[in-house]
Image (cartoon, rainbow, N blue to C red; front, side, top):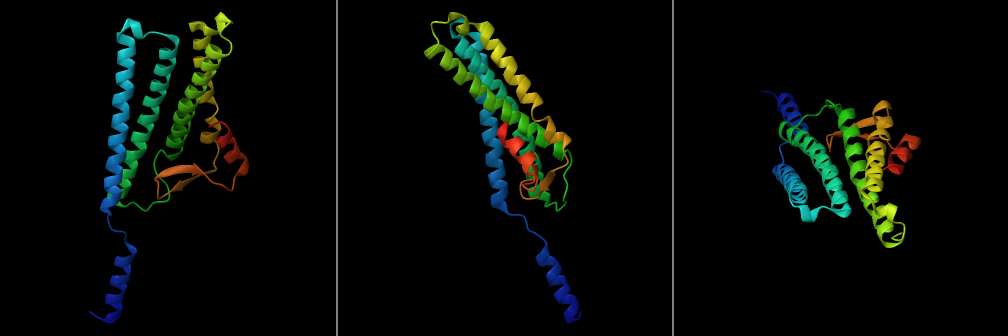
Length: 192
């Protein structure tokens, strides 16, 4: 074997990325944290649904946040599984399957979780400041707030999936809106 062949072999092997075990350990920690989130959310929903003494407007809002948390954890689990796959098999593609759909689901799940916290703060405002207006403290008003939350959470991020401004990030195995598109970036950050 001549020297140029050996140097070509060494340079091609140095271009390859080796499996980094600490990334896989971090990925496994991420997956275990997601499963812990699943356990806590499902436990709260089962306890609040099973015991009549736990049924109140505030428990309804907390269960709503737990449902949004389950959706968020599900989307993050899908993203974590893609990340594990990419860390193990060391894919070097510039595009990943279902990238736009996963980005939309990530924005929707984050928006739903964020909006559920906003609904809880509005409810706290009703109970603390506007407590004399008893119609604001009813289940009916809170169901309307929850319906608004889910409608906004599902509809507003639609422009994320319809725009072509997303770019696949190899490091995170996810699609993000490029900073070059200022209007789409501002829109995404405004509604989240």
